[in-house]
Length: 235
Image (tube, rainbow, N blue to C red):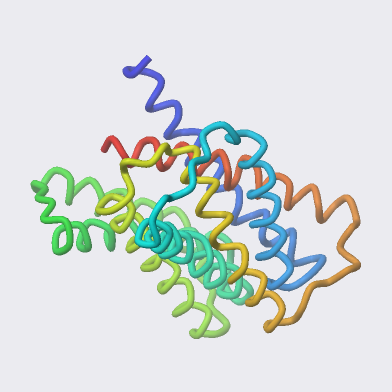
């Protein structure tokens, strides 16, 4: 299972996540970032709670609650908010390139914060992988507002810091349970951001928009994050 199962999990994680960048563009046909942010987290929380209900175990101390809250707002709130607002002025392909600069940031953060050491092979592999993305999508690079570009870079940084924080403080938690908890702990802040950046569009009950959010919340978030935390805890 390990020989073939883990590469297969990685493939599906990457596929589910990659499709999200295109889905965001489809969602923009119906509304702006604030409602997309709220609905994605809401659908992901509902789906993850239903799927992983038995694995949810709440922290017992204030310090542990605080750790989960920090993870939630790095991995979910800040990452999603900066990504969704940044992609309004950037193509889906360029957005994915910028977001996936996160492994380089994560390597640097783990070097300084976790004392991780890695050889030339790993560093070369990360550089080649990122260079491949740039080459593939080079002709799609189009930025109308550099503030959007900055937000996407900050989104990648937030995700990188979140993964390092998880590795340092929370690897003892069940991946499925923690996946659900981070969505729950992010929800209040996500709701506030949605309210102050445009409110909640009550006319979004149309099937097309909700099907997009259903995909992004289920496979694109709940399942993909579960696979990510499972693999990251090990590797």
